[in-house]
Image (tube, rainbow, N blue to C red; front, side):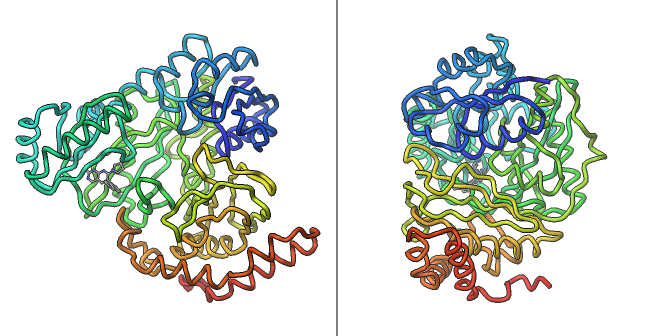
Length: 495
Ligand code: MV4
């Protein structure tokens, strides 16, 4: 087993990885920017090294500085978390060259999956259904016109070096194609340093369903079922759940097999996700995310498998600790991303100092966070405060638990998107499982619902923000729960 792991990341995911290390008796090393001196993860680690100024380009994205810290610490592996350098083939290569185990797939696989056109080609060869579209990059308008005509409008133009939605342009008819092509190429060039784009048939109302896969260095590949991530806003996922209410047992088995074939075909080692779009019984490959994902806990809650521990085993050359037959899925789990943003002001980020912090608990609740009372959320990074995950024997129980946990959750100081999550948990269409990637845009009552929730809690934040002794804080928390009684007996009718 690896003995010392450097975590090339910050916030909740750094803490998440260090927790797995601690359970396995592995030493953990943090690297932190000047903005993260007081962060929980830097304190939680066994050792911590400063790596530069707050802007990520000068710290968390600086390959040289991260490698240098790993050498200084004598780390034998690096866990990249998600974002930052997690899917950077040059970083994986730099680790490989220094004899440090990169906890993730090889630089070759990262390269292949990072090139979305190449990924489409590989998946086609692997027998995985892909969205109708091009298997080569498109440069000329003439080519684009031909392809779009073949597959039929609407189409979507996507940057090949991208993923995650940036630069994607939907085109309804030929008249709009040239502009879309040029703007997508321009965004691709500036954002990803590569003007290559490709074209797919645009699926108008799909659900986003992704499969968690794990591959070890002995060639074993298993899947841990799916997550549905349809509740997103501007390509930022906000709520994820497992299992998806759209899938039957048969479809799950079929998609799981395809996801495994995809991983086997490219020689995938590590934890990863195969993303699909799902529409009226049909599923199509979208892209591979070659990292541990923000939403991995929902899979952990329904399978009981510690995905980060498996990553550490895999990086140590060990076999996966279970077979496909031993993977049992029980119940239902939902994750709400708690962000420092104001859902009533177009979700504008609201960094700042947390004054009061009371995390929910109780049966079926998990909170993964990197914050504490008095912590100042820096403005330089993603404004995620924590992930709140609820498990229940069925989806209704998970929703009921999530709802009561959201009302127990007290964060004062920066505004958070908790009112948004409260509104969704009582939304009839959400409760029914009637989801799509356009859910937020189409649920026109959400804004009003959030306003009503915020109005109901008016005065609470102010009361909670006063400096108080511990006893009175507890009383305040009870008061917060009492104030929230307005949400009623629960929309799910869970007994
Ligand atoms: C699509 C699609 C429809 N058809 N591809 C967005 C995130 C990235 N992983 C892939 N995305 C999409 N790809 C095809 N062929 C719809 C989305 C999509 C989306 C696209 C543009 C603007 C907003 C969107 C919101 C959700 C999903």
